[in-house]
Length: 229
Image (cartoon, rainbow, N blue to C red; front, side, top):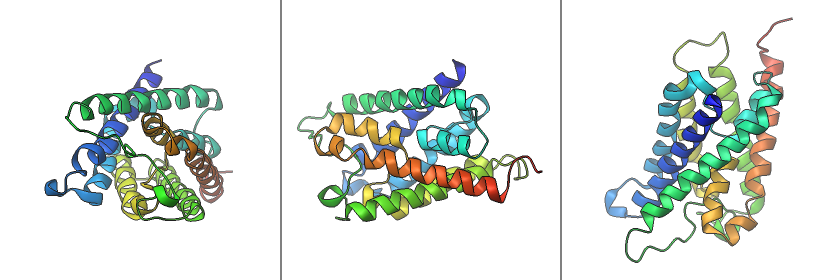
């Protein structure tokens, strides 16, 4: 239960910090954070939680990460569904807090509520195929970073920085395409409050990250298994 509580709190913080920066700050050009600020915010949530709860739960904060670690031989199958449930509930709680804060401003319109989308709901108008490829490849690379940074042969103490900076880079690349998911819990939490098209397109932001994570787990396990021989 301590691990699940840690994943709940960590995912709550990821959604509140990352999506919150998009909904509350990036909406105002005069504040100047833009895409870069949002990308940094998502990365910082992971860095801060890596050092806060990494020793408790591993700081997955993402169903795709848990699945990728399981495929890579780093995570016990019996913990997979409880972790995913805790992550999704934590994300929804974070989005709920964000909704309460955001609606405290007169005239606030929920709009997309930092949801992920493709086609007319892509920030840059990218197609479903472009979104699918982007989410698979970005999640693949995210898991490669995670599996490498947390390997027993990797330098100690720097995994949180590598993973957080990796997520920042991923956002810098893919915000214009999908508003960046690489995390089904993050996508679900925002879609529930945005409703409509965000719910209709949510399937892609579960399927693509999971496919990318599975591929990364298999590839990294082949390249550098945790246990040789």
